[in-house]
Image (cartoon, rainbow over the protein chains, first blue to last red):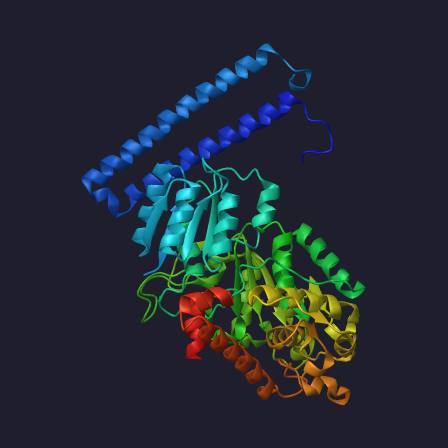
Length: 88
Length: 452
């Protein structure tokens, strides 16, 4: 557990927020992917238009996920440029 | 048809959820912001709202409190993609019907809808799903005896026991303690499924508890999950465990030991993680001696044993409990909060409360409803409470072990309610919607009460 009484460094706070936001975004993308996959697995898969919609939605989610990873990499690099002793 | 409202600013996910809900026979509306959701909720008055915690224009928690303020009967299921707000989650506990973490598999919806909506599925479970789900777990514990109980529940909660047994006289709040154990334990985010064992017959036990596959027996038109599956990663509360048929007990014991079962007619072993909390007002040890309860099941359950003392053994709790239910009843019936005179308090302290907290609660509710002014004194108490020699009879709900239930009293409470409803109805010219609003109940409840 986090000790809320101790002083929390700004950097650490930013990092926490970044991680929480990223987890939030990824889970939303997974929710879409899972939901669409389940639709494909049940009888929806038989309808060509819906089938296409589902597959496109899964592809969009994956592309968004890839962009998120790139953003995280950039964030990590900018953090590496100003290293904090606690992260070594 | 049951209606649902989905409030989520993620358009894509909202439409997937709508699709899944529609497939399950609900009529569904969706909104992509808190404000739009609130407006739609007012217009469509859905029975169920799926609410995302993070919205672009306002917090889901604000939507929750506003929606609950104007539509107290609506069931809200909170959804979140990242449960980082642990303090906020504490705030919603008790106010929401369920809690889903994204991503979730949509078959979780079946369990959730099954718990929430009374569809007319085959062999509907006699499960009594907390009528007061909207209320958080409130236990009055001023007395050392009750504080010991709470401390024990907290200890058991942190160790995450698999099985516990709660014993106490009728009306002592065994269900509340079970809920408390659930909320304090590691399975707090899971469901709390309640079943009254006296309502499950021996023949239906297996399909009730473990579910069945399609065609397992005549009438099994579809596959159905049992209570054990519905309670997965949560708590299964077995009320009146003493009434469980002897022949069913070994099956429960086996399930307690390995948490694995087969659906009736099924071949696949299903593994779950369920905390079993059993409760009874019977003396199970005596029943074991009389060979009416299996000793092995008794010993297994009795490992974590919680005994709730009767109200008369913890008199320090009487007045605080009365005060708690007085506030509750005043809010529910929209009545001013009344004060208890010294002689009224004296009477309450002296009474033996054979029906325990439930009896006290019923009395307080009746006093709040019937009190003409802002002060309750001894003269408004039912005569059997004033007459101390009759202290062990004359309760609104008396456990069978004490005396026969005082039927005239319970009907007079119903009568009081009826009179009050009629009065309110007359004051709004017979408009049921308005009357229900004033009474703080839903139109459906009002209709049911009028039909009683």
